[in-house]
Amino acid sequence: MSSPCHDLMAGTQLLGKSAEVLEYTKGACMPSGGDVQGEVVLADPVTVCCYAPTS
Figure 1 (tube, one colour):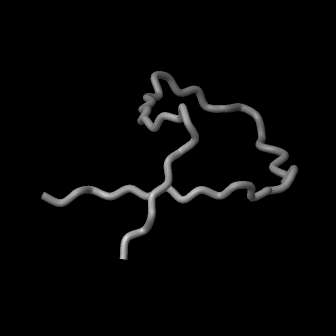
Figure 2 (cartoon, one colour):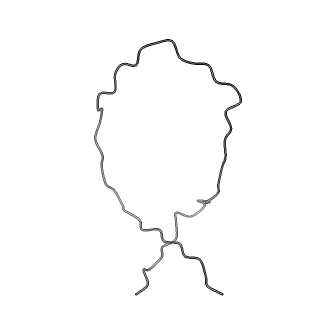
């Protein structure tokens, strides 16, 4: 059974990025905060599926 695929919003592009840490400086402050703020709201869920064609 195959899952249906849906297009993303018009004008949306999928691409990949990579990053590299060029210099690392250790932090000097103690972590704080981390309290939950706001809420998650599900709006217009979209299913994206990808498959690799077989040859």
